[in-house]
Image (cartoon, rainbow over all chains, first blue to last red):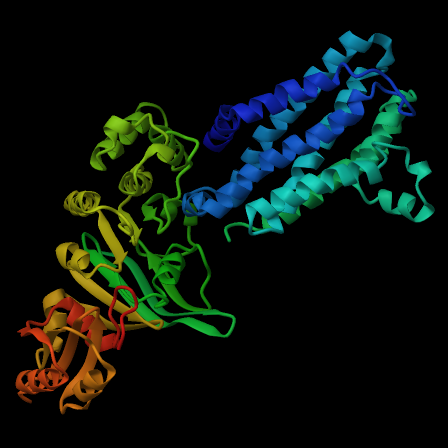
Length: 228
Length: 314
């Protein structure tokens, strides 16, 4: 578990990362219910925050590839899959832990407005892993860190908007509604809305399974690029 | 005992043939210098040897076993100093070594001891708790080497480990290589610096355009060109007519220019020292002229037609 341990150490050593995983998501907890979304608005933004944090985490993997440290790991008696899983495992631990803290704090702040906090936690946890996979896959398409980071910063809000996290998908034209289903953010919105409307675990099965399938596909795509 | 063997290795990138039937062998305890100009295929050869890239054909054996048999166990016995400094900038020198020692399976007091030993070998013990970002180029290079040494490999591969370092760090690195070799480590060392190979290597392999063009001890290789001599001419101004006249002289095999110095490789027995002087005097402004004893650099020049460093000019 050397890689896992050092991934946590490296991520938490950077002050900007500490701010990102504490202050920013925690601030969203205090945003009240407003508009069409049946949950406190902060929970919409928390989805976006998760994607940005995941993007920052996966950027470290990309940095290792570009700077050649991944090459050195490739020469060591460690399989690429081990390296990748320990990285993703450490980052997933942070994001899932953060989801737990946010849902707990949300329950304390909003009380009964948050129906089924356990299910909310489950939805955010699944989306955390999807976000990590998405970022990894995104970065694998680029050789240049700046380009990858700049584009993903623009793509995340776009995915949020088109996926129904900022406004309802029903407000969009029919073609966009169909295309929205291709985005993982659509399934996050589905999961959150279903939870807010009282769906049980079975009612969440579709969004959760789709998000996990997306995660598997993204991680597979992201792991194809190894050293170059 | 043979540590590494490559037989008839062919490697292509698309249509570009990078390694063309390369065969090399390394015995335990050797320091082998791998020389070649840019693009000769040195790094590709090292990557192929370690299994980092596949080859199109040929056989590779490490520690007497085909590459691919128990790869993880084989990797454990190899250290690789990468050409670029590839350490984590956000971990201290000690943490970098703990990380790389950890992924090679070292744990607990054994790991701590090896980390301290590696830091001492490369002379960074005093700076163990500093981030590499605060290091000079030479210190970063030494940390890069320490990361490859921390697990005490039997076979150390060094891909141009001294590029861009100050003379003091270079001396330290070369001394480190000698010391490791004295302790039993087999070393494959690639470099652009001929004097480094002359200082440490027990055997030299010269690679050019994907071919092994010469192999042997330095004295063996120099012996191969005993029928040649080298004239070093320093002039005020190197002009094209002068170079043309020099190239036309009977017995001249190569003319290389380096600032105001012209190096002429010529066959022995043509009396070319006088003729070169005459041609240069005619062109005006001879500062000095002398015949040099053949060196490894001359061997390289003769065999490849290129100077090793900075590409050279034929």
